[in-house]
Length: 139
Picture 1 (cartoon, rainbow, N blue to C red):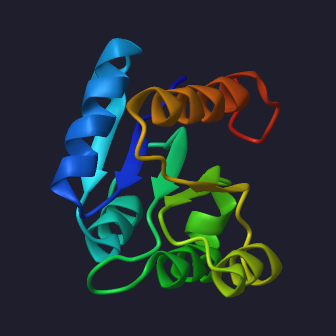
Picture 2: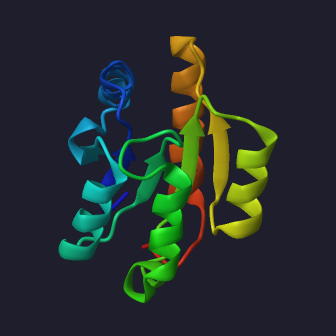
């Protein structure tokens, strides 16, 4: 894992739980949290780093996760970065899932779990997959 993992999540309790999980997985120092997508978008446009992965909620302030991913897809410089992007949300309405896969370039849509161990397993699975997957940002 070279670049940071961007977590776009406005719920402080979820951020706390994610941070605890990432700490247990010994990768907490590579995590950047954003409470709204506009700030994450500004970071992506201003910082030359190559993020390893974006994990994003759907229901967010300022713009929702779908709008955030649309903005990334429409920006030629950000699109060229080929940043793996997954949704991790309590919102699993079929309409949202369909839109995410049919209209955007996402690589996964996962439901947040209320169970700590289950959430930890999901996050671990996501990270493990991207660490072993060949993609344009692979070392």
